[in-house]
Each structure stands twice: as C-alpha cells, then as structure tokens.
Image (tube, rainbow, N blue to C red):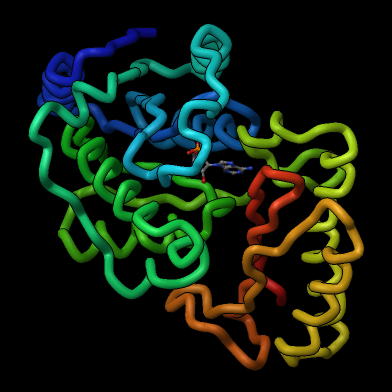
Length: 280
Ligand code: AMP
C-alpha cells in the first residue's frame, strides 16, 4: 500500500495510473474508519483496478462552533484497516496543501442544500462539495463511493457531478449499522454509555415508521408525530430535524410512497447523530 501526503505527488501518481489504463475506485473519508467505511472500500475493491482512499478532516465543512478540533483521529489504526481492505493508494493531505494561502474558490450546489443538514449547518455542504470536487480533480477516479448514511450529502454530490459534468460515476452504498441498529459513525465514540443507549431511539424511530407505513399508515404528519414522541421519550435526545422527504428532490412529502425517505438529525447529549431510511 502506497501512502502519499503531498497533493501534487498524489495527482501525478493517479494521472500515471490513468495513462496505464487503470480503473480507479475512490473512497473519500475523514478517517477514524469503521465498518461503514469498510463496506465502501470492499465495493471499490471489486469495481476498480486501483483502490484509492483519502483521509482528510476537511475544515471548510465544519461550522465555527462544531467539533473540528475534537474530531476523532487514529491514522495508524486507519492504515491497518486500509491495508487489510486491499487499498492500493492512501492519500492523507494537509489542510495547507488543500487550502493554500489565498484560497478563494468554492463549489455551491443550490436548492438541495437549503434544507435538513444544510439548514442546521450553514456552509457545511459548500465545504463538502468544494473538497469533494478538489479530491476528484486530484484523484481522477472512474468511480467514487459514498454512503447513504449521509443521504443529503450523496444527493448533493450526485447533483454537483451532473451539473459540472465531472467524469466520475457516483456509487451509493447502504447504511452499515451496529448489531442493535445504531448507524455506524466516527462520532459514536463521543457517546457515554447512557447516551449510547438512548441513541437507539433513532433507529427504533425508523423501524416504527417503516412498520406503520407498511401497515398502511401513509400520512407523514401521523408518522412523524409517532417517531417524534418515541425519540422525545429519551431525556438526553433533542431533535434537530425530523422530516419525510422525496428521495431525489429532498422536498417534504405529505403522503408516504416508494420515494419517501425519513431523515433525522438528533442531538444525544452534545453529539449530533443523523440517520435515514426509505419507508416502503
Ligand atoms: P466520513 O468519514 O464520516 O466523512 O464518511 C466517509 C464516507 O463513509 C461517506 O460517504 C459516508 O456516507 C460513509 N459512511 C459513514 N458512515 C457510514 C455507515 N454507517 N454506513 C455506510 N457508509 C457510511
């Protein structure tokens, strides 16, 4: 496994591989890898000749009061996981390399970023799309893999890729969960034992809504009220948003159908967790 930090070395290496006719599969991450990331790497391993992984805690997608400094990091462990997953190329850029002095260019996807996490975290998606676009330009991947855990992020990246004619295929991958249902996240390490227990309300809320929708309850208002009271029964949980939206437009839907996705962000203690699922 080759480990590169320098941006221009990574770009030159990837260009060289492309010239050799290699198909590059790319998994961008912020590190502190878990089985969710691993599922992306395994799929990328299947689909590409070369599997590239980036580990970069991107400062521009964090708000001033968010957890950039505290974000969990363990490069040695990440490299072990990457090696075992058959990664060929790891890129660990520095913020100075990605955003040099005088950096002034940003990518902004309109509309899709106005709601949900975009409403709660102003500027977040601008940071995400900017860095993903830059990573794509360096890695020149044939395909890039993203998790449905970050459902809105995936929709926004698909839109950016289409709108800017970026020559990369975007592959979405299902959410990987802990055995008890909690969606895997690097941020789960922030949770105390009691918070970890109460965090199950997110996946339990999803399970409840899916069950009720399958039984024939298709009113979003009714389903959201039921999920809300399940989550609010946990004293450490505070809902940031809870919505049923169309999977492509992310607009709120009054009636649940096959395109309806339940999306939520919930603070458990001071940790903000997100989760989502189709309902039918
Ligand atoms: P992150 O390191 O949190 O920025 O995530 C890097 C990539 O892994 C993103 O495409 C995420 O959507 C994806 N990812 C994170 N958690 C999960 C999960 N539990 N299941 C599937 N994909 C995930």
